[in-house]
Amino acid sequence: MENGSVRIVSLIPSATEILANLGLSDVIVGRSHECDYPPEIKNRPVCTQARLNSDAPSSEIHHQVNNILQSALSIYQVKTDVLEQLQPTHILTQDQCDVCAVSLKDVEKAVAELTHSSPQIISLQPNVLQDVWHDIERVADVFGVDSVKVLENLEARVKICQQKIQGLSLEEVPTVACIEWTDPLMAAANWIPELVNLAGGQTVFSLAGQPSPHLQWENLLVSNPDIIIFMPCGFDLHRTRQEAQLFTQNSQWDKLHAAQTGRVYITDGNSYFNRPGPRLVDSLEILSEILHPEIFDYGYKGKAWEPL
Image 1 (cartoon, helix red, strand yellow):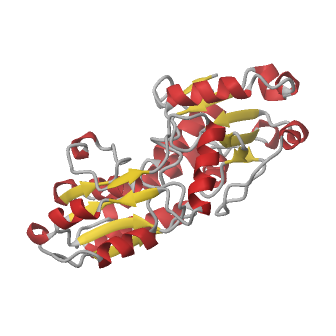
Image 2: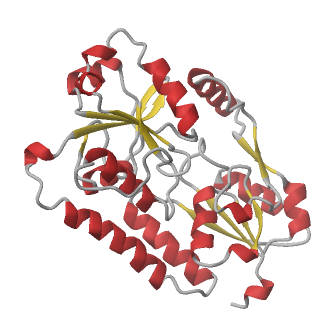
Image 3: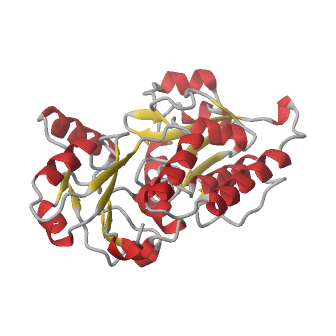
């Protein structure tokens, strides 16, 4: 395909990162309000907006989300007027989570209203790491670019982690609870259990490729994991620290093994764990550092994760 005629609007951060990794940043003409990486795409016109206040406390955000969805509205809106001006040839979106990003249904509706262009919609729906590799390959095929080097590089980094933990005994594999939301309490699932296992840990609560389950405090106490990692959806390191500190005020907190041994960590979930794109491999490396600091030191500490 001739890249000169290609005009891509990416409505999901992970797709923007996939495009950039494939060398297609130059043909991205529009983005979502959440696409912020790599930095060079920040000057592209914004084509979506949220109907909720993401600065509110976790419980309030959850409440807003439920109210919006119950009113049969979407949490995010597509700015059809901006799309009309941009005249994209392709729109990348997702069909995985209506709370994370604009839904496929909304994109289809917006595209149906366009008069100047009829862009092709490419919808991604990754649940595990293999799906992300397929997405990269699929996007590369659509735009006629090569994904082999990109995928080889990502897969090689995964293999390095696997090789380094091969000698671990069962006792050296910690149980890990990854917290995706604090109020109500939810465990991180989809690709997260797989990343934890690849990093030499064993997830409690969630299954690879499945939606994130709701938990009760009792679940946390009974499973009593060796390590607790906070990675709330859409929150950076600073915001995650605030949420985690609120969470630890629970009177039961000190009963937890991870709290007693100081193995509680916060991460920048928004940049890493919540985005099913190339930086899931960075997320694996971050987990490797957290779980096995005696083996791994990639230099993410202080930037992508910190002890609580």
